[in-house]
Amino acid sequence: MRSSAKQLISLGLLGLMLLKACVIPLLYLDFEIRRDYIVANLCENRNRPMLNCNGKCYLAKRIAETKKQEERQAEQDYMANLIYQVMDWHQHNYFSVKAPAINISLQLLFDYKSRFPVSCMVDDIFHPPLA
Image 1 (spheres, rainbow, N blue to C red):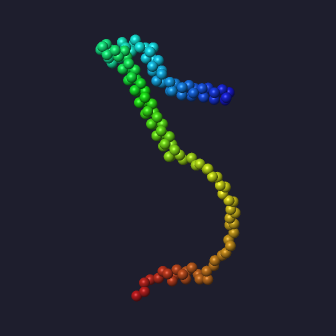
Image 2: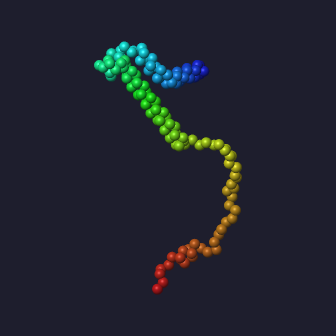
Image 3: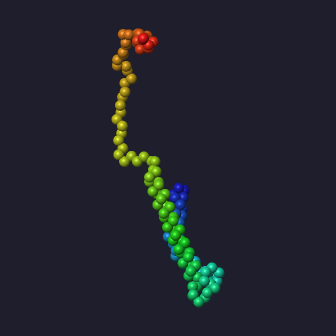
């Protein structure tokens, strides 16, 4: 079941990539199929038959739009990829080093007991000003 789903997804993505690669030839095919309609209704120079445009202005305009859109998409993809690389928050452990195991003993190794009481030290430090 999983294998067939993966195959369907991969075939779908392959089809989309091929469709994207064939956009301009598909524009030419569309132009050839609908040439009469384009010449009669969509051509900018349909009122000036002496130019012999025959819809080529419409085709050139569509191709220019498609190329401009592809350039914009390529620029957006480049910027997104660049931002992703700069803002990559995943840690890459190229050199994985294991931390050494350290055993810390929590035993008290010494005990300090002052010979002087605490009140004696406080009285020496805090006293009224001497005149």
